[in-house]
Structures are given as structure tokens and as C-alpha cells.
Length: 495
Image 1 (cartoon, rainbow, N blue to C red):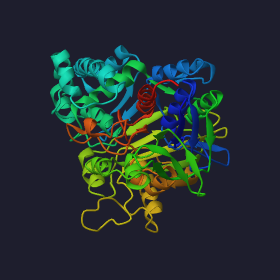
Image 2 (spheres, rainbow, N blue to C red):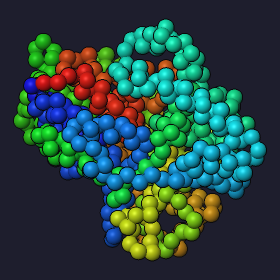
Image 3 (spheres, rainbow, N blue to C red):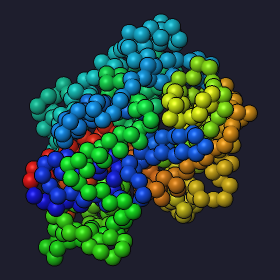
Image 4 (cartoon, rainbow, N blue to C red):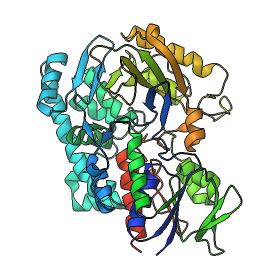
């Protein structure tokens, strides 16, 4: 039995704690804040409640595997509600599109809304996405990344590598399959799921299309925070200890270099044979552990985009509004030009999550979660080589919030007369709450053909140190951080 300290009670850390405790290890989770869940935040005021992080669950089988491996079925802990349509899209020319969960219905919708042939174009892309997903699922998504992994994949199955198309970009792949530019914008949106620029993201990200379409989009009544709470309960049921308001200052090491515990903010030392870091890899190597190579590794990656969040408490109901809606600008590339240059996007794509859930709003009211892509927080913005925005500038967040209300009004969502109050969450707020550097939601972006293989590996060079979460392999998003926990549990092994 190993003594394991998990730094951070985000979903990845809690999932690792549950698996390692179920495997017989002595597990302690240290969380710096007063609540668990990491980016699965929740904000409540005046009877309105908001998920402040992810609002959609995909690949439920990943979570079913986690719960089955740690003592009981997921459905005994959580009620999952499948969404149909998964999302609705609105384009600058007035076209609307519902992404029905059923593939035939979605193809028919595409033909009706975008013109004959759009459905068959999407089906061909979806077939390609399925091949990419199947090629990557075993050797990449569920396995630790190792040097030469792509070469071994090529040797075993050259057709799989051809499907993954290393060196090819997502934007180029979209142009070769999708004739309608509006449908290519929908594909571009999948790159932003990892905080990436679709013009630079690898074609392999088309696999996200398959993951969403095949396994569906799901919601947890009461908010996705319930998922984090359920995983925490499972970890504690397996006798893991979760310590809140417990900040780790340093991962300590023996004279030989192996981890031997963590130093806490109160000055005490918590001994450990294994340390699992569920923190941004840049923060880990920049602050918690001295490893020059690890630090250089994370510095090579372009930081992912962050997000600017607007929580709207509204009176009344909006006819015909679904759970998820994305409204696109006329110039989508202009948004990426601005965000990756460290500027505010004047006319961004706007994502709305409006659950029909009594836990989220009083009767005859709505709680809107509004998200736009944003440059990371950079207090030194403006200095040579520093990209980002100083989101703590007085008036910046409030001014941008009012601008976005005007953008929504121009796109047919004028809710200003119904607004009871609003709250902003900036990249600076996210950085302070979660410890992610600059509030970059996914750590490093997937910009560049080799970006997926440049993520820090789950097993650090420091003996006894492991990484879980969105900034490490296999990537960001709820399913992938849970997969990272499974990889780490496999590397550590049973007691």
C-alpha cells in the first residue's frame, strides 16, 4: 500500500483518488479552495443557479467505467438526461440549424437548412471522424503517451495513420469534405473545445465530432457540479480523505530525487510515496516542483484560449430556446485573430447554456450561462513577448459584459429589459479559483500538428510524480481528464 497525495480536487484528481483508493492505496486529496470540483463550478444567488464550467457531458461510458471500477454503477449515483438536439446553431445570414441526436434526422436537417447535399457531406466527414476515433481510442486516449507511439501505430496499421492524417489541419480537412461554409464553421467549433485555433488545430480533432455524435450530449439535473460531488463521494466511500482549504506549496523530494510528500501552506509536511498533481502543468513545473526539463516542456506549448463568462438572471421565458445554442459571427476568423493576439473579440461566437431545470431558476425565469472565447489573463500584457489581457483593469469586464449584451440583442436575443442582474467571470477569476495559468482552460492548446504529443506525459521525470487533468495527456474536457486518471491508476498499479 502506497501513501498517495493528490493535489487538487478537480474531476481528474477525484477520479484518480477514487481509483487509487479502490486499488488499496492510502489516499489524501488536498484542495486549496473550500469546495471540490475544480472547473466544475457553481454560482447561486436569489434562487438562480449556474454551472460555471462545463455544461455538457459526453462519452458517458468513460464515467460508467470509473464508477464500475470503484464499487458500483453510475446510474445509482446520478441521473443523466440525454439532450436532443445536442445544440442549435444560428448563423449571421439568419440560418438556424438543430443538431438532432439522431444521425438521419440531423442529415435531413442539414439538407433542409443548408441545401441538398449538405447531409451527405456531413456523413462522409462523420465516417472519417469515426475512423480517427477508433484509431486513437486504444493506443492514445486510454494509454500513456510514449516516444515512438505514432511510429508503432503506423507499423501496426498504416490505414489508421492515414485516417488520423498527421501533419494535416482541421480547417483543411473541413474544406475537403464540407462544401457549405456554414457547416465548416460548425466543424471549426470543435477545435475551440480544446481552446485551440481551428486554422492551426490538427485534423485529428475531428474525432471529437464522432465522440459527440456517437455517444450523445448529456446533462445532469441539478447541474454538472453533481458529477464532481458523486465522484468525491465514491472516493470517500473507498476511504480516501478529501481536505479542503488545504493549499500545497511544494512537492518535496528525497536527496535521491524521488517525491516524499508535500509541504502545506500552514508549514506542515504531508508524507507520500506517490504524488498525483491535478493542477495546471505550467503551475506544477513553475511553482510546485523543480524540474527544468518539465518546465521547458510546458513552455513550448501555446497556451489555450480562456473564456469570458456572463451569468444572466432573467425574468420570463424565451420561446423556442433549447439547452445549448451557438450564435456565429459573420467573420469567425476575426475572433481568433483577436483572441490569440491578446485582444477582445468585438464580434465573437456566443455560446448559451439555458437548462430547463428548476434547480437553476425560479418559476417563469431563466438562468443563462453565456461564454465567449477570450485571451488568457496576463497582468504584464503590453510588454514585449507577453500575449494576453490584463483582465483586472478597472471597468474592462463590466464594459465587455455590456458589449456582449448588445451583441446578443443584434442576433435576436435582446434580454436587456428582462435582466435582473448579471455576474462576470473573467480569465483572471478563473486563474485565481483553479490555479490554471492565465485562466487557460486546457493548459496548452492543440495548435500545431504535433501538439497532442507535446502535452506533458502522465508520468513525470521526477520519480513518484504523476499528472492528471486537462493540461496533461490525453487532453482537456471531462471525459479526457477521467481517462487521464485511469492511465495514472494503471501506471501506479494496485497496492
